[in-house]
Length: 334
Image (cartoon, rainbow, N blue to C red):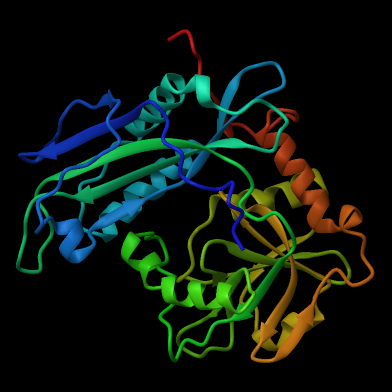
């Protein structure tokens, strides 16, 4: 299951900006973690909301850095377009991330203990509506929380039965409603001893898509990285980074393509990747009673999955030179 260390712990300050009369007002830092809403607020009635997730970390020399926040800013804009919400400017998004990190510097975990400062940017429709329509007023916020590991051991997945449970896959949009649709499934999975659900494509139920909270990847027996290509899964920033790390740093051939369910038994390794999960190895997948296992005879520390994780983690912590634009330093003297 998800590690209890990955849990909300309020930090002193969060960023707040409001959209009214067709324009964004000046944002500000607030020490109030509460939001007051009308009972008919659009977010409560029709779940008009979008969110992102990224992390800030301390480096060995005491700096504080974030990992590819420009990608989160761009993805949030796309989500807003898909949800008929006003776009939050990317430059203001990056400035807001810096402000929240800087204001909460005292609670950002130290370097090297496996923890990080998780940032949750989100936007909600706030004014009352009753007919089905978009809101006209919105609130954009970013809060942060010190967190530990999301998964503390190798993961067990089950293939989710889409006849009974709607998948969360939404392409470019990550809205609270879509995660809510997967809550029944994840609760059931946890009760049965699984860590996550693996969703297949809704059209044919023959191709691998993603899990409820992370993208999935496989390693072939000859050491090639293979990830699903689909228009209905989250365009993961971590997955994009995994592909580039594998090819550019480790010389591993990487391929994005549709992955048929009937071929996943032939892969040597399997892993999940995402902001929360980082890179987490998958021990097994239960396909309706048929158990597929991975890392058979492969010491985890020698696996391709672990090699990729080591390099990506070193980049995210500032221990290894990163590709241009991947690391944004938050200066504390601004």
